Length: 186
Image (tube, rainbow, N blue to C red; front, side, top):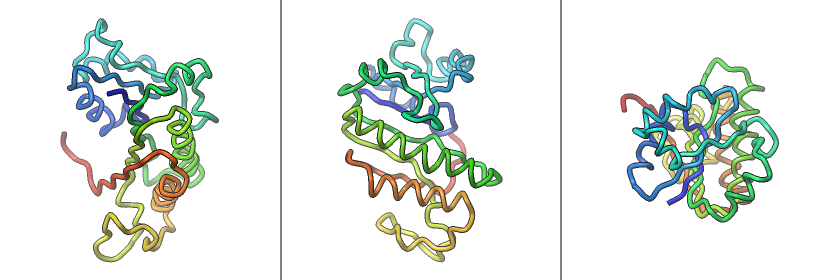
């Protein structure tokens, strides 16, 4: 299987890639800002890869905040038709971050990744959302619920809900949404 992952350096993303690489026939491309290149040796070690096996996990220069994710036309052409699954984990998770920063990453970033998945002809889009997409809904918020979200005044709740809406309404690739409530441990 061939994967493209955003948010690969985060808590969940690092562990997801390690799981994906457990299959010997997997190749993972991941979005990486140029300012994060120095982290690659530590990531390879975390994923259990030597520098010689690094061809199974390939950084793609770009940024969630840039048009087209900042991915070069050459890289897009090389990946077109080759990606089975796009996993979108990149987001601003800091509840103290300002609204503009969260809209840029969580909403517009999601819009860009959805467009990338379609442009690459990916077979499936996986969006890692959050229970925050429910806002302050009282009671159980089931997986089949979305429009029932309430009290989305906090920018994090608002942007996680809006990002999920983009996937639900604009994603032309078959999609799945995951809403972790709390992530701890390994």
